[in-house]
Image (cartoon, rainbow, N blue to C red):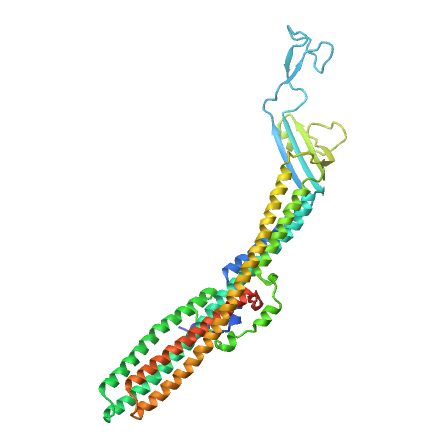
Length: 475
């Protein structure tokens, strides 16, 4: 094996290893980066954007209705046996002399041979139609643009849903990560206490049961930490799912969840509040616009419509079908040159359609569309009330969560102080081992309650942003 061949293999293996390492390399993601990644990769948003493209194509399709409609046709026909020509016998006139037919009487129906058509015929033509005025078409153009607007508003609504889901999953990862730090701190503190208690036992200042109690407490903490690590892995996978991030690729969630993150100024939220800031309200507004155009279209159907048409082509006949395709066939209008010549024909005209009476169908169609519009207008009232209720609920939940967070923060500080004092008293021989364990348990409980309250506050803030239509500001 040549030296060059060996170096080539090593280079390929090195490049593959670098590529694999880069693929598995952890990528840091802040909340904004998580949201942007989700907006760029979500299947729901991808489908919503496809709907936008469909709407754009629909607009162009509608515009195309008003452009000239041109079609071409060509065909050949061969009559193996021509149909008979039927007429009544008139001895005083007629195109065909039938006086030599035995027994014929005036008024008899005669089936004569077709002398006016050859067996084979060919036609090639172009047809053109052009709308000059059509009220429904003009309304259709407006409706097509409104449909495009609706698809954009629907995409914004989908964006809002994705942002909400990603934000909540992101906060879940952050708060669980803080809880993991608590486990480590508690384990270190209890382990230190265990070492101190063992030393006191060896010196006769503690009993073996004291050591056993702390050992049990330490073992329980380690078991709880192991379980929570798996839950944290699940929360990370949930975030990946909401982002449509590859499950096999690691992700480094950066950021810190604290009180500054969840604090908002409610007065600023209320100051510039408008229903139109909500994505669902914008969708309903566009549906209202489309329904008005439906009504307008029904009225437009009662207007006259005017269109122009033209038909241009060539035709010929021949005794047999082969004569239609002879190389010496010519295109001429200069008299009867022969059966193999193609002769042009043309026509043009205007069509005016004036609707006069439709059996009152149009009247009732307009009535139905107006009733549909009333349903949408009722939908505005219902949606506004629902939004008002959602805002009140979100505001109250947020205020309660902030109060709970402050209370739990205070409790955690008190519990930390109690645990510290209890440990000092125990080490000095003036406190019991049970008091230390109870203080540690109370501290862990207040810590858990604090981070639960912090997570609840972050979810309440997200719901508040959604209620006021502020989630879309993050896209």
